[in-house]
Each structure stands twice: as structure tokens, then as C-alpha cells.
Image 1: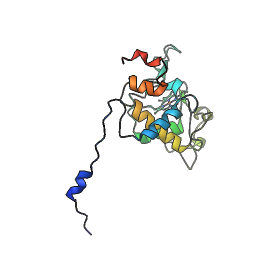
Image 2: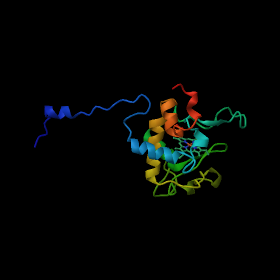
Image 3: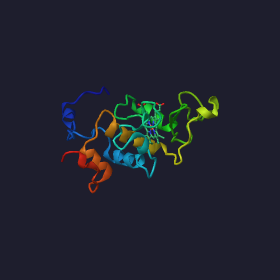
Image 4: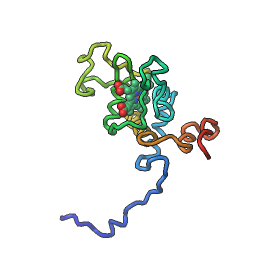
Length: 175
Ligand code: HEC
């Protein structure tokens, strides 16, 4: 049977209510789940990347390197697949480190950039996070990073969503 474009199919287009703050193409439940992962009680991305995703602990305050300890996620140009790899595999060089969050990363089953742990010197191997994440949690935290931070700036709506409306942390943003 030849598929044909039926005109009434065009009426099936959904109109989404645009929110100026949080990109709508992401599943809100996954954004919420990812925010939980990002916070200190689970993966604790926050101290390195900031609650605002704009990086933290500038190294010029921390050792004169003139760059952030965890880089800003707001200006990241990574694709979703690259971010999933970054969080799964982690990074390590002589002065920067981000934990590896997926336990089986760097194994033949889940190589990172084509490499396994045996290809690296021990001092080059990213350190496994104290609390590794499941693949579903990594998908969720990356959705959160993309929806909340990548290409955006912090604002009152996002701040209140992060800290809750009883916190005074967001008073710096106009009502
Ligand atoms: C101990 C500090 C630390 C923690 C905790 C940490 N990161 Fe990172 N992250 C870094 C550093 C440092 C880099 C940069 C590594 C590099 O470029 O060599 C980085 C890079 C990234 C990148 C790549 C950004 C880009 O465009 O280059 C993403 C995405 C990211 N982190 C997300 C996360 C998420 C999500 C979590 C929590 C699950 C997390 N990070 C936890 C320090 C950290």
C-alpha cells in the first residue's frame, strides 16, 4: 500500500504552550527526575557545575588557573550523545577531574572514545563516582542539563524550581 499524506493528518499537529524559561521539547517528568540526580543527595553535580549551571569555583580563586573547576554547562556545545558519554565516562587530566558515573564505562562492553581502562595509565583513569548512576539516571540528568542550562541563563522560574518557593535564594531575581 502506498502511504499517502491525508490532509486531516495535518490537523493532528499539537500546539505546545511555550514557556519562556524551560525548553518544552523535553519530558517534564524526566527534567524533574534529572534535577534530583543533579543535586547533592544523589550525584552531586552541583558543587562543580553550580546550581545555575554556570560553573563553579573559579580556579583563579583556587590555584590561579583562570578557569572554572567545573565548566559552565550553559555554554556547552555538546550534543546529547556527547553529554551522555561525558557523564558516563568522566574526565581526568593532571588538574581537572570529573567522576565516571557509569560503573561499566571503560570496559569492552561500554568503551569510552574507543578506549577501555587497560588502555590508560592508572593516573589517567577517571575515578568512579562514590554513588554511580544507572543509564536511566544519566539520561535524566542530561535531559535536565539540556532543558535547564544548555543555551540558557538562570532566571527566577528556574531558580524557584531548583530551591523551592520557600527559599530566599531566588530573591535576587525580580518577581
Ligand atoms: C568534581 C567535579 C565535577 C563533578 C562532581 C561533575 N563534573 Fe562535570 N565536569 C567537571 C570538569 C572538570 C569538566 C571538564 C572536563 C574537561 O573538559 O576536561 C566537566 C565536564 C562536564 C560536561 C561537559 C561540558 C562541555 O561542554 O565540555 C558535562 C555535560 C558535565 N560535566 C556534566 C556533569 C553532570 C551532569 C554531573 C553530575 C552527574 C557532573 N558533571 C559532575 C567536573 C565535575
